[in-house]
Image (tube, rainbow, N blue to C red; front, side, top):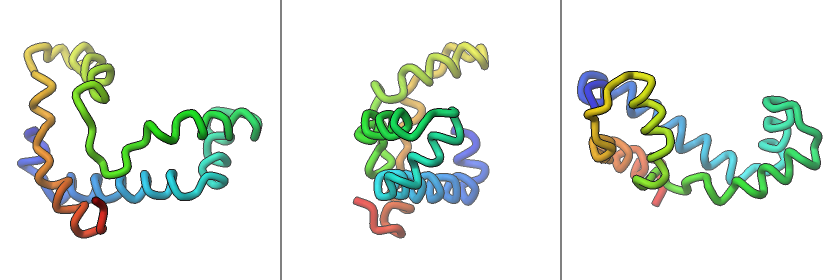
Length: 106
């Protein structure tokens, strides 16, 4: 939360890159399969299956739900020892909406 308030331009750039990345992954199966093969050292068949099984999990518009975040949020709370931070602290979508509008993502 502090970072989005103290450096909104950086957060906006990060969100913009994430939305473009999500769009690329959803629209470019073969290129994404190549990346999966490289990153996790899978053969093409297994990388393609991984892509096909996970594609629907990639957000279309950048929004995430509490359920989407819960696993990662718990890991972050443990790692930072900040157990008193609620997941609802992540729900300021102001910058996301701005970037979505700029990129025509709805």
